Length: 276
Ligand SMILES: Nc1ncnc2c1ncn2[C@@H]1O[C@H](COP(=O)(O)OP(=O)(O)OP(=O)(O)O)[C@@H](O)[C@H]1O
Ligand SMILES: [Mg+2]
Image (cartoon, rainbow, N blue to C red; front, side, top):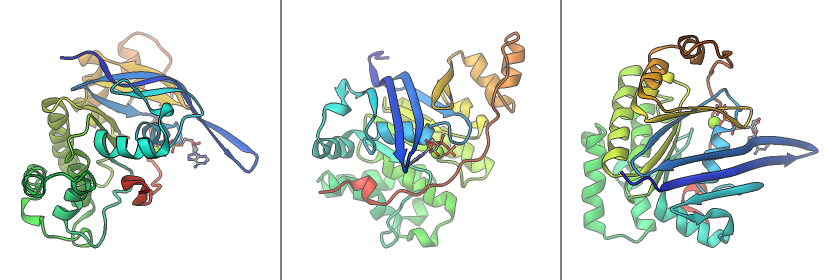
């Protein structure tokens, strides 16, 4: 495996300023993710997970520190360069799936490729293959409104992978899925990250989903609280309801915040395609 980091955050910080209120949403975060590595990002509601993902997706600029993808400093790019970079290198699904309502499942997935002006017939084949792998082979022609929440989420996952990005970012991709379907979707997602050597980060409130990841990063109050890399510790975490059990097993560190359900904050479709 190539151990050069694909994603690198160096003391990345985001401070939101609004009407006299200043929120340090991401506070000096330093992490790295290599090609073929699938990371679970967990932490309480409001701990900065979506903000970190949005910065990595080039949708938000850092206030301080650096973010690099494939060695390129996102902060050094103009807005136009960031849009081009995002279209080519980054795939993402956010808390709301943001499918285009008047396009079918297949067309929603192909959209990313059309933005990148890729070859039509090849892309249609790959879009069909991905959707089929995600269990939607018989729903290619359905509109989002004709699909369940979980099916829509799977279309969004296919869309995030279709253009061969180096980086895949997913914000609670299983929020609308039952446990069985969530397991299926995340295991396929993990396979696709591993096989195709992408660097993947998945935010989840469901620790059970961590069994499919190679590393768990926990955020609390904008900071990295801990990074769990040992397989046995990750499996323990995934098999229990929290970090405190892991802590007890690993001798006496103080347990901390529990995880609870996230808020859904939809992004406009322009977030995906960028301004032309
Ligand atoms: N546009 C914004 N303006 C001001 N503050 C914001 C903005 N977006 C998020 N925040 C604040 O930044 C902090 C981190 O929010 P963020 O959405 O990144 O958390 P999260 O970990 O994704 O939470 P959840 O699990 O609920 O989705 C929170 O305190 C939130 O209220
Ligand atoms: Mg969030």
